[in-house]
Image (cartoon, rainbow, N blue to C red; front, side, top):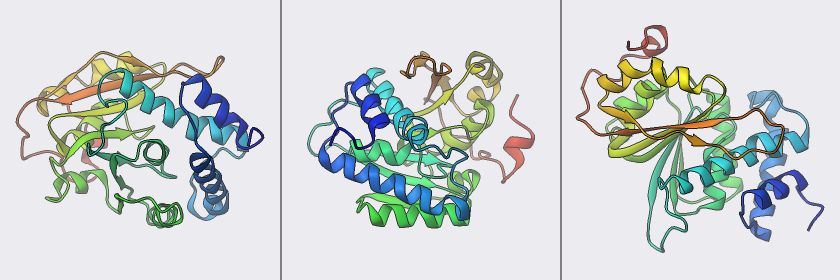
Length: 250
């Protein structure tokens, strides 16, 4: 098996994660489906197989490890424990599906507004036989207003979806009190955090310590911004679709 998914296996070793044969088979099938669907669904701009493994699978698993190290997720999760997690705008399923493959105690909801990508995600979930994974075709603002989803999650993740000031309005309405929103960011992480002060106050949330994302040598550094919902949720939020991105809360 050493010749299978070498880039992912290298990342897993660096992250001190153990990939079973079943994990490798799932990721191989996943990679093949991304390549098969990419042209019609626009899942990724990355075409190199090793780079896909590093950027999409490896970085997703690095987020899982970062959340464990920050105490957001227990490691390992005890038998019977469940954590309900929403992934906003996952596109090809990143980071939620790779996290779920490694941690089956996650009850995952993929919130994807693009119809073709949502169709891909449903096919992916069925092909990998992932239980307790649901795909919701909706914008984040719509999900935050849905009684079946609003205030229903322990954890919300998103990757490269929106600036933090916008993402707070997307994600915090989905969180239970005490729940956490986590998003990896690049060189502007500290600036985005400062710019999100108004949104955090309006949504009753606070920023926690910055968490470094463990990446291969030479990769541009990333930091995980972590936000916890502490206050009451104002019924005004999220505002109607399109407004948070046009007029971020100041």
